[in-house]
Length: 97
Image 1 (cartoon, rainbow, N blue to C red):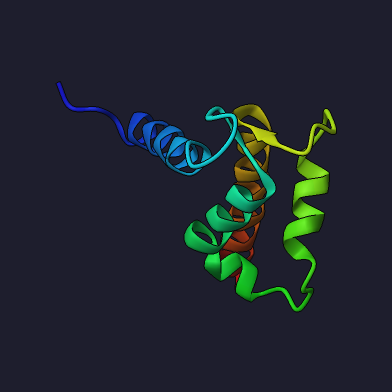
Image 2 (cartoon, helix red, strand yellow):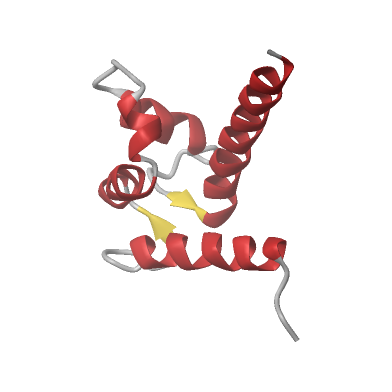
């Protein structure tokens, strides 16, 4: 049986998160360095659109709800969901023109 597009997307999120989180320290959380590496490697277009050199630090601070200096999978998914919503809104606006 083939996996659905949504199942493949979910699997991709899990694999991407763990490919970066397993590099140092707690293998189930992203350190600041791992988060920066993930953002640069996986969301470079998103970062390129920002003129703020502290964008990674701001993202990290906003995501780190429990203030432990790391981003767990749930906190990471919040970022992906927020970016996806923003991209969808942009897509809808571009379709209306």
